[in-house]
Every structure is written in structure tokens, then in C-alpha cells.
Length: 221
Image (cartoon, rainbow, N blue to C red; front, side):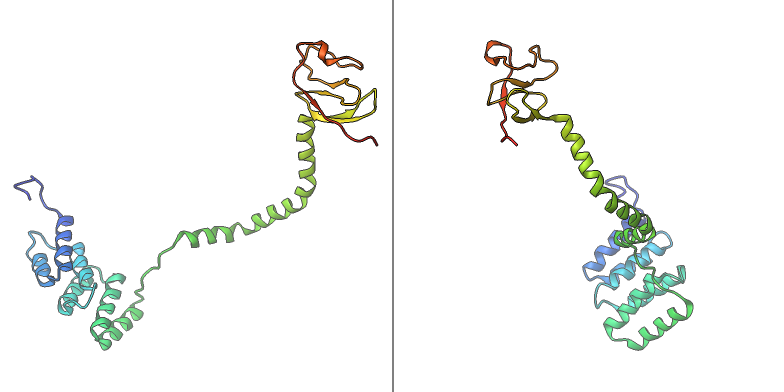
């Protein structure tokens, strides 16, 4: 590797090599590699070897030696204790498993459980529940009154309704379009920027610049 690719192998390379040997079932060769390293193997090397031994019913002797090395470097390593307990349970060493778990309980060693986003969101909701309930209560009381006013305000900005001055017919339409009474033919509404004027009796066909007319008719009251 160093001659062909000019890369000096590091700890991560040896960890990967130990992992490959262990997954191939060559646990003894992986231990020999860990012992023959050009540097003193640390927690990463022995942790990788112990993790490989915990994948199945592999060599319990190698697993015990790797666990002892890990616990020498880190006596309060909870994952190493739990993995060794699982190895003992897998190979049927119930007494050793019980003693190790008793030791963990005596020394107070335990694995810290992971915290998921569900628990985080639940904690935030619980912490802010008072504010959330206040907002929900306020919305429950205000929306029934504010929604009709808001809808009416928006409608008044776009819709016009009224009564024809000649035939007293009610009309309704959009403010940006010309509205013609169906009964008498008068233009009862036109936009403010239109050049034609609003008035009774005027024939809309006499002007060539009249925009599209929408006829809206309602029954008389």
C-alpha cells in the first residue's frame, strides 16, 4: 500500500482490515494482526475486534481477551460490557454473564440510551404546551368573528352590487368589468378608468370602445 499508492496505513486502515478478517470468520488472524501492529493498539483496534466477536458465536476466548484489553483502556466502557454480556449469553455462559451484569450494577456502568427526534419534539411540545393551548384558545374565540369580516373585506374589494336606477333591478358583478342591466339595457356599472360614463338610457352599442359586458339579473324584491 505504501509502495504502490504512497499511502501510509493508519489506524482506520487496520480497523477496516480487522473488520474484514472477522467477517470472513478469521478471528484468530484478526487478533494476530492486532498484536503485530507497528504501534501499540488502542481502543479502536480492540473495539473493532470485540465488535466482530459479537456478531455471532465466534471465538469466545478472543472476545474475552479483546474485552479485557478494551476495559483496561476504558474501564467504564458500557458498550464493551454489554457486548461481552451478549457474547456470554450466546455461548451459554450464564454465570459469567450474571457476574458481569452484577459488576456493572455495582459500579454504576450503564449505556446511555439514544435520543430520537420524536422525544425531542415531544419535549419541546411539553415545554411550550402552555403557549400552544393559549394560541389555540385565542384562535377558537377570534376566528368565528374575524373570518366573516376578512372574507367580506376581500369581497368588497372585487365585487360590486346595487340597483338599477331605471327598472330597480338588482345587479352584482366584478368591479373591473362593465355591467349592463338586462331589463332596460342601461350600463349600471363600469370601471373608473373607463372613458365611457355611467348613466341611464345610454345604448352600449353606440360606443366602439366599450369592453366586454357581463349581464347579471336578479329577481325583483
